[in-house]
Length: 456
Ligand code: FAD
Ligand code: 8RB
Image 1: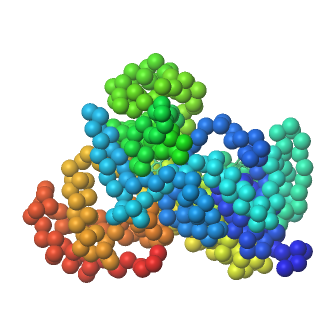
Image 2: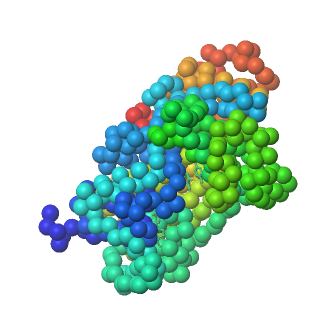
Image 3: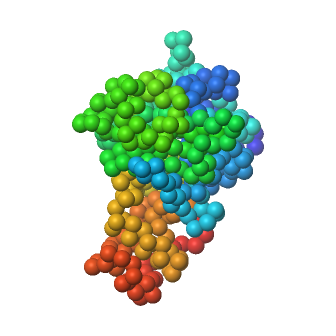
């Protein structure tokens, strides 16, 4: 294809979603330019410098496969087979996520993944501009203003804009001035603090490497994800305000240490830099962002966190954003001359799925932090396991649908509602599995639930 006839694409933000979208579009023959606010992390290291990791599940991996990057990412990931639950007395229990080691999630370094995606985007022909923050956009002329950290600004004539600039999106702010996006932000009321478990002296991992660790404590919890270097990123999730324990009642490392001695003694013993980490790392805020509209005619569209930031409790924010990138790249490649139609179709397809994962992520906080100990919940888990074995063509746990398939999130939510209602009916009047006729129960599952789509 002649360079002049390649359809243009201007991407705002070279984070996880922007750099994957740049790769996919450049691979499909687009003339891609990307503007990123931060300096190039390949030259300057990641701002903040801390190693933060993310859980990659099937949807995200599937998107990486489409870009030809799944194998290189897997080579720098740590497999997590299940949740390792740490009780207050220090005892642990592994709850597997899937049926076997083909159903696992992976812990990957955010910095490493972003650098890998930036390199892939450039290899595919995308042009990346760093220290170039979108400051303003004129959606009539297509002119955008880009600002550098030294205060200098420059103008650029862009075609349609693809907004991947994250939860605090500047493109979203510019769009809001031109049109009503129907924006709603729902704060969770809980924040988070990042801590660290380093590798033990002599190497290896201080706790089980191949698990996502959870310390559930009712109204709050800690989690830990492994890094390839042997350390774990630990995150405490806790109410911001209110009676002890809340972040408001833990002003400094000294009070926080007492709280951890009480509630997370086993973890605290593995955190030599607890005091420094507590005082140095800010409390992060959590919220869900809903927009009624994601696009303005053919001029701009939002995707990833810019369109639908969610709470972290399903580990699906990046996975959902990667699905967006795959969907948008495919639609644009099929119809490069009609961005208005593409953006409308993209938003119509993705918005119900974004709403569904937003809802499921909020529910999973409850499940992670206290559902694990509830007897009715445990009984339902047992029944779900039995139905999974007896009716695998019709029954799949909510967690497996979300994490190990690419079934649209909205379909996962709908199927899970029907599965859950049926299980509640089957469990009525029972407090043990023994009295339930599992043959008849699985017969009913096959009769009343639609078969699972194959190969998704
Ligand atoms: P981002 O990755 O935030 O990228 C946005 C980019 O835009 C950034 O590079 C930013 O510098 C740039 N930018 C911002 N403003 C401008 C501007 N004005 N002009 C130009 N560029 C701009 N998701 C999972 O699936 N699994 C997990 O386990 C998981 N763990 C997480 C852990 C943490 C601590 C956090 C904070 C999030 C986690 N997430 C996880 C969510 C995931 O990080 C996000 O959903 C994902 O990064 C969204 O990608 P994005 O490209 O839309 O936004
Ligand atoms: N954002 C995750 C899960 C589900 C685990 C389960 C949960 C930290 C910020 Cl909280 C969380 C999960 O149901 O057993 N899979 O992947 C990742 C999670 O938190 C990430 C690391 C996180 N995201 C701001 C902090």
